[in-house]
Image (tube, rainbow, N blue to C red; front, side, top):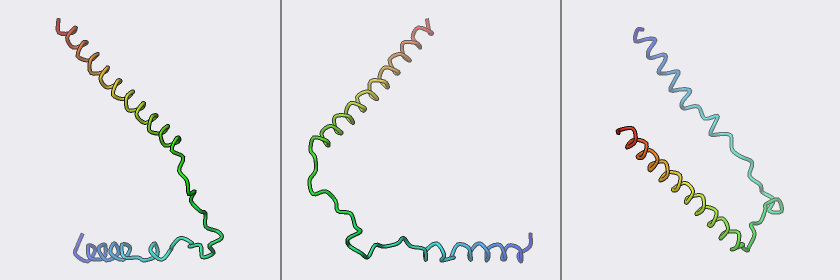
Length: 82
């Protein structure tokens, strides 16, 4: 490749990189306030507590599986060495 091909490639690449078509497309903004959805004013604490309990349970299961895998692996290695 000579310098003319390289400069042509760089120019083409730069033009595609600086193209503004992607920036000109924006999402449709709702101007009518009746179309907007309102967030609920109250938070159900019981639902949040239940999610927290489920997340803790999942974390405990993950820790148990990892610890069990490590213990079984160490046991298998000790049996294989003898």
